[in-house]
Amino acid sequence: MKIQDLPIRKRLLLSNFIMIFIPVIFLVTVAISIFLILQFGNINRATVISFVWPESGPTLSVQFELSRLRVRADRYERGNMEGLEQVADHLEDQGLTVAVYEGSTLLYKTQHSDAAATVAEAHEKSPQGDAAVAWSDQGIAFYYASGHSGISAAVIGPVPLHHANEYIDISSKEILKIAFYLLLFFGILLTIAIGLILSRWLALQIIDPLEKLRAIAAYISKGNLDHPIIVKNRDEIGDTCQAFESMRLQLKNARDTRDKYDHNRKKLIAGISHDLSTPLTKIEGYACGLQDGIANTPEKKHHYLQMIVNASQTMGKLVKTLSLFSKLDLGQVPFYWTQVDLCRYVSDYLNEQKQFLKSRDMMVTCHPAIDKAVVLMDRDQFQRVIENIIENSIKYKCHDVGHLDIAINIMEKNKVCLTFADDGCGVQRDELSKLFDSFYRTDKARSNVSRGSGLGLAVVKQIITEMKGDIWAEQTVPSGLTICIELPLQEGKRHETDIDC
Image (cartoon, rainbow, N blue to C red; front, side, top):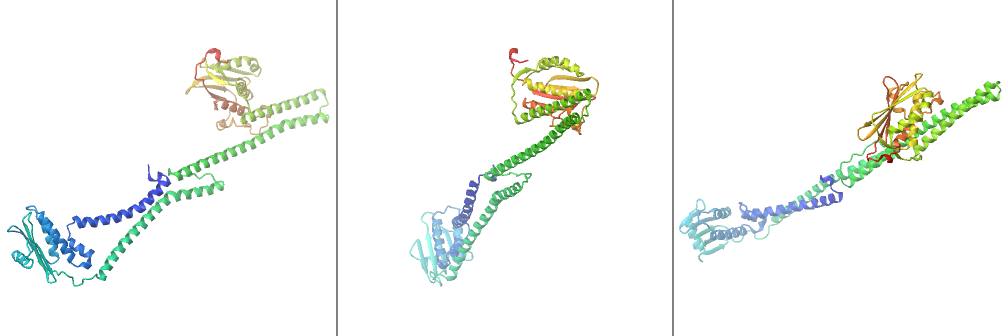
């Protein structure tokens, strides 16, 4: 999980913790460093003490080193002079002379000094015994002989007991103040820098997505739904942006659906107006002919009346088909589902319609590639599908006798395909996908309303969609149109008596 995926509450707590924790760690680190340097460092701690407490002069630092000299003399291990040499070096930095013996063997002396003279002077000025110090304004004399290790050490030098400036130097206090102020300044500066960095980081993680969200909201308020929201975070802001993006997509889909329905509605109204006006014009014309006495013979009157009846029947069929299409579109047509053997169903239908098809000069043959294909259908509605497809083949045949071949094949994914291939005039390839649109005809002028309303295949598509199937059109080779219907097969095996044929 990335840090930007943490919830905002946790990120705020983390940033506040870091803002406090890092300066504290900085100050603690400085303090521990100073302590470690004083405790274990290989530097002249007397110099450090003199810097920290400058008002004490060298007195405090000399006392400190003399105490360390006694301790290290007691802890001396043969051959290890490192500790004693380190203390001696620090004392020499204060201007003192040092001599160290192990018994009668000289172990260390200050360069260019007489060790025996150093011991003699220390004994002379501090004759109290094996541990003595004499310190006056003229200087210091120190002698120590360890009873544990056999080490004896003598220290002499011109370090007065009382410094010339015994009292606290104002300038020294100023140095301390400046050091304190610098440390405080750097601590505050570090805190401010961390706060600015964390604020910038939080701004990038929180403010920027909100700014983008505000911009998208402004676009949406103006009706522009084409700007996607790029979601990178997985926190509360990311969830909000994701919800906003889902809302934008839903609004866009709703707008597209509305536009599509508006377009279809306008197209439907235009188609209805055109297709109703043609038969109405015929009815009006023939009725006026009868009224004005143009039909002055019984034969003409009979012809005019027959044309009025035919136009009325065409309007009736159009209104009936339109009503069915509207109900299917609104889901108001009830479907009565039964399991039907598609092969036997098509065969029985063709046997029943054999004389009718012959009278319409249409030769229909069925070539099922399987013996049985059980599907779930509404028998009456599926009969309407077959009738509309065959009727289209009859209307658009280009020979005296038309031919229609019906095939049934099993497809992959447990589906069956029913195809109707005729040898009619067919359609252009770019018109295949439009055949199932409402009121679409290849006749752009829509001059012959009686030949078709443009709703037949639209109704067929609605019924097949309700059956969970798919339908499309292809060109028949060498000429004609093929309608393909794909339906799902029933998976469970059922007894013959359970199948409605």
